[in-house]
Amino acid sequence: MNTSAIDTPTVLRAAEHLRAATLSGIPVTPIRDLFAPDDLAAAYAVQAELTRGRLADGARIVGRKIGLTSPAVQRQLGVDRPDFGVLFADMDLTGAAEIPSERLLQPKAEAEIAFVLGADLAEGDLEPDRIRASVDYAVAALEIVDSRVADWNITITDTIADNASSGLFVLADTRLTLDEVEPREVTMRMTVDGVEVSTGDGAACLGDPLNALAWLARTAREYGDPLRAGQIILSGALGPMAPTPPGTHVEAFIEPFGSVSATFSRKERA
Image 1 (spheres, rainbow, N blue to C red):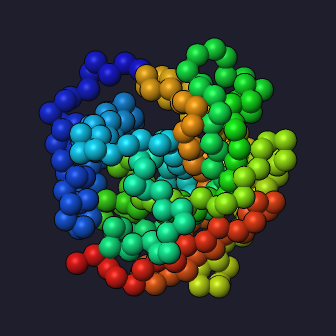
Image 2: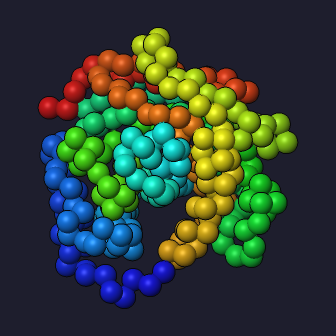
C-alpha cells in the first residue's frame, strides 16, 4: 500500500483528537474533514498511529475485526465497503460477569462468527480452499462496537481511523470446526432485555463470513501486516446492531453454535 503521500502532521493531529475522546470519555467531532473523503490510506495511518500508542503502553494484539460487512449495518452508517481494526487482549471480556459500561462511550452490540486461525495467511494464494483450511475453529461472538465520534456521525474515513469503531468482545464456549458448521448457513437472532432486536444469517456477512476473512487476509497483506496463526478474527455482523446502555442484557442465538450473552454494568463513566 502506497502511503508516501500521507500528511504525517495531519495523521498525528487526527490520532490525538480521537485519543482525547478515549481519555476523557467525551465523544469528539469527526476527523473526516482533515482528509479527502476517499483517502483510506490516511485513515488507516491514523489507526496505525493509535495502535502504536497502545502497544507502547503495554497492550497486546490478539487479532482483527472486520467491520461493515452487513448491508444492514452499511445502511445504518451510510457506508458501502468493509473495513478492519485491531483487537487487543484487554478488549476480550469472555467469561466476565459484567461488561464495564464505564469503559464505553456509545456502545452497540452486534452478533457474529469469530474465527480462530490455525495457520498464517502471510504468503501464497488466498483461494477459498486456503482460507477455509486456515481456520482452526469458529465460535459465536458478540462484538460491542463503540465510537469516539459524537452521535455516531461517521463516514468510512472516521470509522477506519477510530479502529473500525471497536470496543469490546465476548466469545461463546462452543467451538466448531468448519467440518461441523458452514458459516454462510448459520442463522442469528439477538435480543436486548428479552426483546428481539436483530435477525440475520451468514449470508448477510459479504455473502459468507469466509468471504470476509478472505477480504481481510488480502487487505492485511496490502498494509504489510498479514494474518497469523492464533489470531481471533471477528468476521462481521450477521444483522443490524443495537444500542446497549448501562444495565442492558444482550443475548445472541447463532445456530448451530448456541447462544452468547453479555450484561452491561449499571455504572456509567464518571
